[in-house]
Image 1: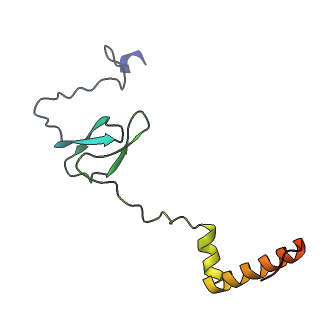
Image 2: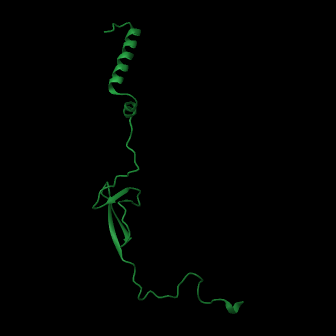
Image 3: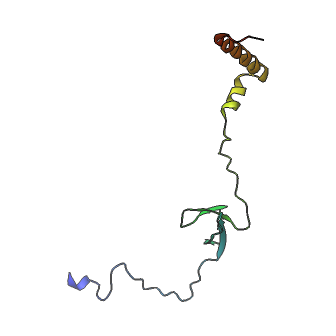
Length: 114
């Protein structure tokens, strides 16, 4: 068994190949900026698609230095109570309901109804 062991090297820790003649893949350095002015630099492969937004190491959202924040199409616009009410009733209907309810309240208080 001892005649088959590898001596003088750690298994899996080092490579016998040299780095001579090896060229790294082309890269590009992209600048992002946070809302507070912090600059974030990220290195991508030359053919990589560059994202418009990047999260910095501090957790802040950074936007491309020469770009704008994209609008997320999956974000729905905020629907208010008024918007939902207008889906069910028209404005003249709402005015009529308001007048009726005010008349009932005034009658309960004993006020004169006009």
